[in-house]
Length: 265
Image (cartoon, rainbow, N blue to C red; front, side, top):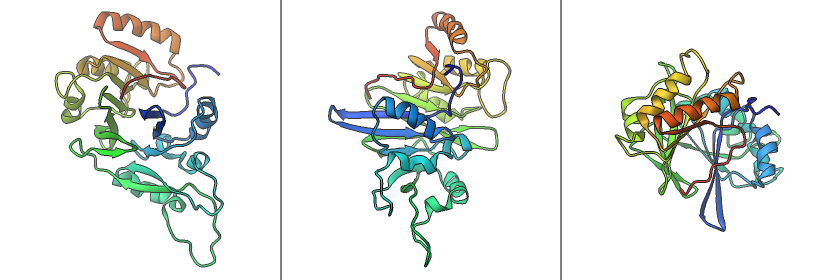
């Protein structure tokens, strides 16, 4: 498969507090979640998902929710522990309309039991000052503008190394940019950031020039760009980024499907 042909953006965190205790935390389960499970979970022997975080309620972040059952223990009667899923109230309200059968708890009289993903919905606030912990790892919500009429979440995490994941953004509120900037909350070890188009601009996403401007301001030790359209050439554009990285002193690359990053959290 062409490396420039990409599935929906997502991040799977394999968090190891010790060598025996792996916890698997995934950020977003979009339209291609099932394909990603078949391609990457199988290859890397990922047995389950312990926690789910949602950045927002658009199709590219939530339309794989029904397929979460493929990474849960099999039970024809749904008699399993639910997977905790963290999301904003706005996203919750939208999902109640899109996936009512994943939200409701009680069957109506005479209604048959059907196997569906078992999820425990946990509302979080879009507030940097209100972190939460799941599967042993603390996350700080990072509210960002995803078009001027919409708030999306990114997430900051890691104790030993600081990582920020921001998949859908057109503009940073000052408080969010401060929290992840070298000159503000402290230098990130890794910034994973939205970059839709190679040329031009977009009303709800950062594109090449805007993304690199943001990387320059935030000044992480390393940045990976995500969310590119298929028209962006992975090898050619990474060569351009190598030159930019040498000039600016910040290691920046395009991410790719299946990329593994080893970092001490």
